[in-house]
Length: 384
Image 1 (spheres, one colour):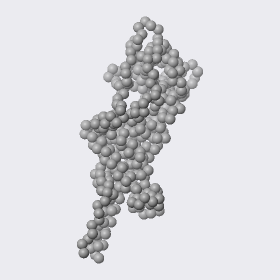
Image 2 (cartoon, rainbow, N blue to C red):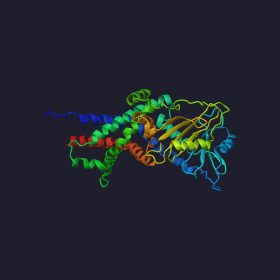
Image 3 (cartoon, rainbow, N blue to C red):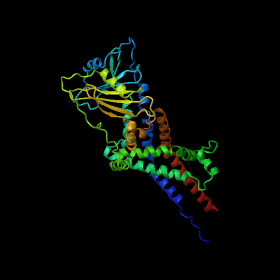
Image 4 (cartoon, rainbow, N blue to C red):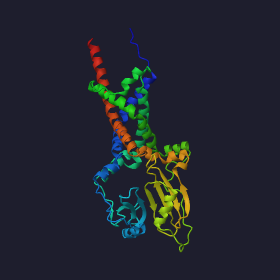
């Protein structure tokens, strides 16, 4: 009697796609997810090993920003200052210590004593830089590693979607859903491994899809262009700082002090939060102020003001007034990195990335166990 062949179903097709894409990209996905997990709390980890610069409240008289800027000018050209929302924290000045320096060097400054200290390099800087290069380029040349990571990200997106399809039971009943929602720790290691892959993958899936969709903006220009078309606005299109403004004042006209500029910005942006103030270096430069709202739903959202040197408001840009598509485009990076809701979202992303790191391992073990089971079954049939 001829052996009856099983019908090749859609579910079987999805399973094969999930299996072979996972096997083929497992090592790359493991490295990308592992490095992403480590990078989630990069700043927090560095701060644990960094030497604190403490503000000494010896008196209540704060030095003016003009005085502090003048003192720091011995180190180079002062370009901007960050004023934290908490008064006991030091100010952070950015100083270009040489013409070749693009971003400048950060100096922590005590606003009461005027003492300052250059931001110390961490012993972990090299390690996290390697993790960044692994996450983006697999430690390869950018032109080679970036498309490889991009292709692996597309595969990961397919794996996430196919994994969800496979997670759903064949018969849609509540009792059939329950096993996929928990890990049976009392079972043998093979069942536990299966549950770790199936259940944890399900819980992390939505975040992994978001990470994949946003991560592709860095990998492929065509994807970035397509995303810009869909959103109706340029993704990463404001990296140059937006429209340029120049002062309308003549060199001899009276200008506002930093304190007065900050008072004007406080009236325009009447809420507590961290302020970043650009410092004009020529008569044609203006003040640019960005401020984050400490009471906002997201710590990464910033409002922007541009003031002429006499305090005239030249431009006001509030995040809430931007069209939704522009808001989404400006939040691509914090959505991908998990900083969108601060520490809360970073914890969720850390756990999701950690789960993603284990998926290639648990998935490979499931495949190996099935191969062993098939060999054992064939062996038993041959002896029958």
